Length: 537
Image 1 (tube, rainbow, N blue to C red):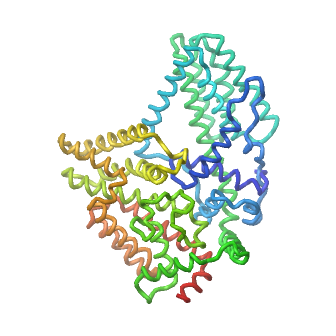
Image 2: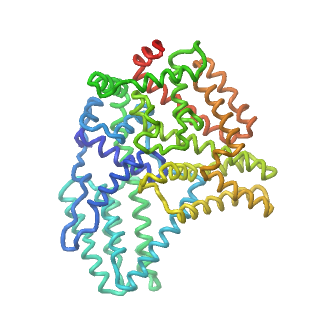
Image 3: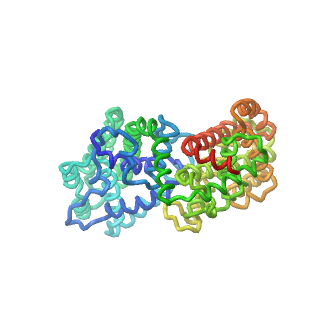
């Protein structure tokens, strides 16, 4: 890989964010991504047919990185949210990589996507019959733009791409023929052939098999041209998603050793520099430290324990900052109280805030399902948990930024209701696999699912009970010294069992581990400052 060190993290982070969104990971990077995507769309937007399409700015600037020697090489000139988020992620997990998301929720996501795609292609077909090719050209430009963004920055390659995928010329040829007479062979050959060259060799066999099958369909006398055109686009975008994930992971592997070795040292040096220059005052960190001591309600604690308590208050529902009802993508959702030492952890904090809120609501659903449906099993509830996880986080994000105008997250009420209905149907179907439902129980269950997705669920007595108990369980596991913590961890199955929430054990453990990892990492960076502050208090 021969990219210069300045562009490694910039390009890697951009691809990381895109891949994360494609596989359904909810990062706070969404807001940053939205702006980046608008720039990409602008650079890849439909240009005049008689002008060659320029490659996106990202592609033009991309070069293969040489071996970076230090974190400073990677982040010397840019410290925006995305780059810091990538560095923090690698600091906490040197083996981190993006994975293609799989699981029970896929059936709901896939169904939703299928409905939206069908609606789009139905509109394109209607427009084409009326001699309006604008939407068709739009999806072609979108596909070409994605291919360009993943093509190495070589002028000869980008020029070749412009020549073989001249959208203006292709649509001009289509306009002169009836849809049933369209010859899709050249376009399909160019697109899939180009994708084949971009993907890893290990994926070529699948591509070759698909191309062979697809060209046979194109030869069929009863072929449905529009159906085949859509199939080509669907397959191409699926392949590009995988290429994006693979490319991201290659970049991550090249960054990981440097960040793992020098990350803490770099972050500490950068923060000290900001303090000395007066850019950071530490006033909020001082107040935050005092708050952590007061909440711990004990003078017989280590600095680490006070610190972990403070981090918990920033993340869990019902904390002193009440972030479950705040717009966490706002400039300052913490009401001006976020400690300066944690400013660089904002992305991770918000990610954990969403995760915790989602977990609390799923706990509410599981507890209420047990009350409504007789004979529930852990197997049934495991399936329900898996179905609810992704949409629950998605709806929490939408509620949080509902009035902020964030285009990449905001959805229409109709779209939300449709999505909620699909999730509801999937959950009902899953429950019925294990237990027949009376009509009245099914209606109650539907109402419960809608309530769990709504903000008002926070005021439900069952939710308040869950909040109190889960908060205490996590406090008992995260705050104490390591030797006590280990003993408390052994009680976790019993504690969750008493709440009848054993199906959430893995999720709770994940939240616990990430909370401790975040607290320990931040403490390792700022331990000297925290030591002075807690001692002073």
